[in-house]
Length: 332
Image 1 (cartoon, one colour):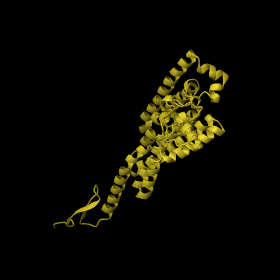
Image 2: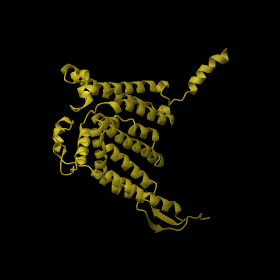
Image 3: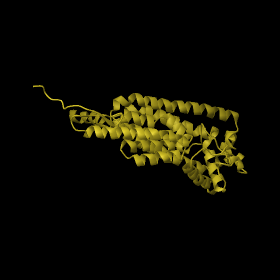
Image 4: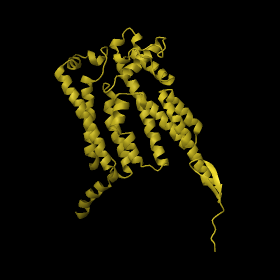
């Protein structure tokens, strides 16, 4: 009886502390998930949706979207949901020291659990995603988005584009314009809802690339990978800006971090190529090219320093031989 009674505690202790069902993670996991679900529901009422979308034309949701009471409650829901998701993230961060290395898997799992519901929400916090779709349609119409804004489209007022940017040319690079063209074609062929999902898919690819490469950089630089995953994968800033709003900064950052990893791995050509792709998404990424060059020079200097024979002093920061000194000998 004593042996049978001690088996259950042992099984409980053997349970992986990084699993979602483990006691330490129940509170942050459920708080964050509840916040995501509240945001999902509230987005259908106060999220950005063009008049031509199925969401706006659905009788019940359409009525709620024009009801002052419903929109007020939903706006409060966005605030509460955002605070709950942020609270879950902070609670998870406080638990990371207790979880050890298993916290990496736990953090990535919770990031997925919190993010998946928001893939299907209406866009919140920004209407840029509709500008991406409209710019793709401008390109599909045979016009240059660098010369014409979404306002050139006859139905632009019903596409969800922010009037502030309706007549502004596209500030993005050719790679992202090519992606926009595909998304715009999806909108024309299937509907704006599917185009929003496609744009979110592109953003998620950028987030995954950023997280995977960021974790590899953390390991190579001896930075805590668990805390890195907490910042890169589960952060509300990433979820809100890159997933919910589907900003193209997600793809740009993914390519930049991948380029930085290539530079650390002494693959400068690949690093420059990846950063160039990031520039082709948003030209501001050009600022990262000198960083890639500096990182590659540092890694090359470290290799030279490691291979230098005894008696050669190498300056790792500059990457050159700065002096010669005799080998250290025992005076005896």
